[in-house]
Image 1 (cartoon, rainbow, N blue to C red):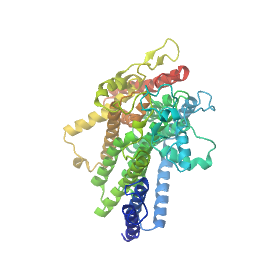
Image 2 (image 1 turned 90 degrees about the vertical axis):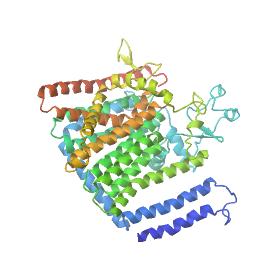
Image 3 (image 1 turned 45 degrees about the horizontal axis):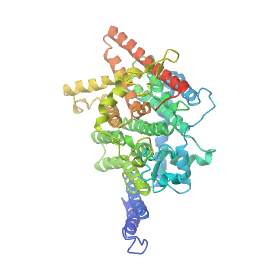
Image 4 (image 1 turned 180 degrees about the vertical axis):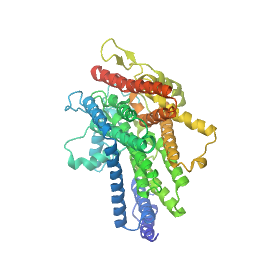
Length: 545
């Protein structure tokens, strides 16, 4: 802990400067302005870094060695998986080509982004501002209540911008814009939101591909190869990914934010699974997990609840399985949680600096077709209607190709119709309930660490899916794109359930063949229906989607 003292003193000094800024003449304002808040956060960051530095390692050289070792180990593991499961690569390439075809409207090269919101915010960041460089219409500023669409009639405003103190802001998280600022020296012009959506959605599929290979190689490699290949195809072409990439009506800021949040969530979960599959999880891997989940929240705040459950599950797993000392346990828990705590502090300051409130993201100041300040955005009154929308609402039929189309009144298509393969997600739940009823506890299974880890993976995915789905059910607006807020975890649960069910019927070959046939049918319906719906939207456009 010697190195901690090197950071503790300057951190305390900076914090004292924030508290006594007026007394020592640094600030004439007796209140807490944004500058003093920033100084306070900077002091806290200094102390936090010193704590992490002392608990994790005492030398920069050691950090470099650990990062290099961690990277090489994971690259070796990936190369091994690629060599063993080479037959899955044609599916990977095929799915990415499908994504490109939809994102380019079938032209392969013509990419037209409907919005450039993240790029505009990045321009503001590069100028040292938190607001957008677009100036509000003076007529808008002179309205008695610019947030009321009735009063705002006749005044043109950018859709979904947030207006506060005469400036435009975005209520979406800032992480994608920060990424654009970082890569701006290597890009030409503005990077549209469609490009971000494509990159994130492709990244989600690649990560799920790797996650599926990792879980299969550890727990299910005795099953037939065709099951893995079929599952990867489902993961790639399951709704709503191609739908979200349709060039003109979709591929916007909404789709980029949703897919961006899920990309960082899945990436963090993959790192956590790999780390926890080893006897002693790496503190570096746990810190990376926390950092990635911080980026997820900083992209899509609504997934903070699923990430909270996942973080709890990782911490619980560390506590139950670690064989290190109390100091080692504390170091690992701090490695996991510190990036999240610092990230939440940073987001709180970001909100405070823009809207004078740590809890205000700009959603209530949004300029939309409804008054976001008077209407209930999240409420239990929407649950039953949304349950019908997301589970049972049927598509419309057309006499010509592509035959299916989302209904304009409610453009959401229920999972029962568009993703019947998700019915297999019920199997892991049933298996866990049966084991619980039979009093099969963790203690009774300590000798079978593989089964224990698989159950942990399933429970983590289940908690993440259920919490995200409940959040969507509470929201006043239903849309196909919101399926993306829970589909990665639901899709992985469905795949794992299909694998478990097939294995359970090993001693019953006739039933196993019937089960496999049913799985193939459901797995075929999901991508086909998803692509048909996406082609319908691509061909005829969309209303209210």
